[in-house]
Length: 245
Image 1 (cartoon, rainbow, N blue to C red):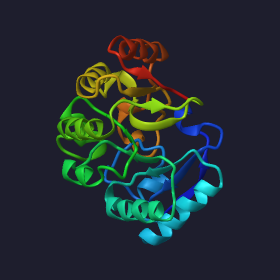
Image 2: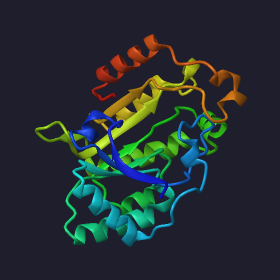
Image 3: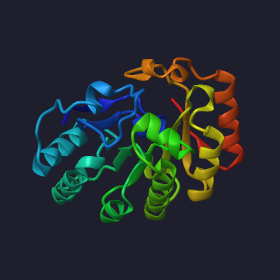
């Protein structure tokens, strides 16, 4: 575990009044060259922890008043996350659980998480497989991400919130707009709408050149704000619920 605590910088439906109880895991199953959290996701720096220790932390975050427990980059430690959720629930843990991932997930593993995860928050990064290989180091990103999204949506459906506007269950997809439409953003949104009708989506404008982005001239710009706004309108026209910071 790299860090943990109430986080108030997540999407509003996750933050509420108590913050999202984030648990950041060191390392990641993707190798995005522009990662804004590369000090965590591109290292193994952190404290070793087993399922019992993670479950104890979940219960502490609940006592602190967090709205949920949010597992960040959990893919490579999904077995520990599953065990921790089961142990915490056996001790009375009652908050929603959030699986906050890069979208490149095994459907087989997701099926094993059915009933343990309340809110799936995947990225959907690219419409083109070559871009996924070039910038995130994985083949077939769109195919894998779409199959994973379909399974997540099958389990929990569209995002549902309580009377306070805080998420309780469902899918919230993040998409980071890259400069020069490198991500194929409009096609990404159409794929999300076809795969998870009515899902919430955050079309994110906060890209900046980080990590190894300086090695890729096409990644040195910032996304056009007008293009971001256009994509948010596209998302709305496709029936996706816009959620942003």
